[in-house]
Structure formats: structure tokens, C-alpha cells
Length: 207
Image 1 (tube, rainbow, N blue to C red):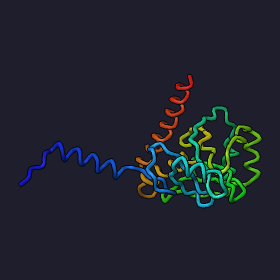
Image 2: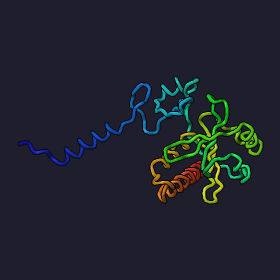
Image 3: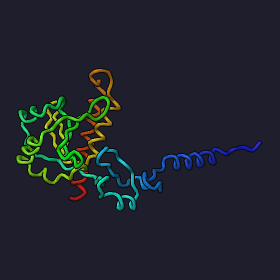
């Protein structure tokens, strides 16, 4: 009987894993780099992986938009407690963005089953922009104001929309029981720490 050498097994396993983990364009099925472009479908808010050619072809149409990675901390953001409470968002964690299909601002917060949409009035958005003109830089559908007021925090970021849905995923994966459990809130803290670390790394790189 032929003996299979352990070295051959290891190299074969590496090849199998490499093929299994290879990512492909959701539109043309070509292999793509791990650091590839994402498109969002404006109506459904679903994300798609795209090769450079498909991103260029589809990324600025009515149906899809290119999501360019962005993390911008808003250190002097103006949002007092009374204004925040007037939004009636049930937890102190949400993101707000301008939706092209809805033709209005939307507020979304994370829950145990995923993203939950809350009503957000046009006049509330107008007040936010008046107090914080930086919000006029937000690109509809693909960028959002991310708000963290958990446990006394007052953190505000202008981020690409994929960062917001990553937070939704964190909550959904780690939620346990009725209150979520300690693990989910630790995971949320880890998420924001990584966000801060990403900002610091970007600032250091641009020196």
C-alpha cells in the first residue's frame, strides 16, 4: 500500500483551504482580492463583493453604489441629551443616514435579530445639520452618522455604512437572553475600541 507522506498531506490541505477561502465577485464570479470593493444595493441595503471591472460598471447607477471605507471621528459634535431623547430611539446606539430610495433620513439601531429601523423626522435631521455642518459631507446610502452614547459615552463618527452593519452583526452574534448578556456589551466595546484604533492608525499613517 502506498504511504502518504505527512508533508504532501499538509501541502494538499493548504491548497484545499486556499481554494475554499478564495473570494469571488458576486456579479461575474471572478476571483477577487481579499481587500476588494463592496457595493450596496440601495433599496434592499444588501452588500455585494465586486471585482474592479464590475464595481466600475455598476457602482454609480440607480441600483448600486460603491461603499468606500471611511472612519472620521467627530470630536466637537453637537447633540445634547434633550435632542437625542426627542428621537425616541430606544437604545443609546444607532446610525443615521440619508436614504435615496426613501427620500428621507433613516435611523437604524441594533437588536438581537438584526437591524431595526426607527422613524427619523426630516426636521430632526435639519436640526442636526444646522448644529453640525460636517453632516453635509455624508454621501447618501453609503455613509452614516454613527452614534455611541452607551454608558455615558458621547462618541460620534462619520463612517461608511458597512461599518454600521458590522456593528449590527456584532450585536446579533453575541446577544443572549432578554438583556443580551455581558458578552454582547463587551463585544460592542471591543468594536468601538477597534474603531478608535483604526482612526489612530490612519492618523499616524498620514503623520
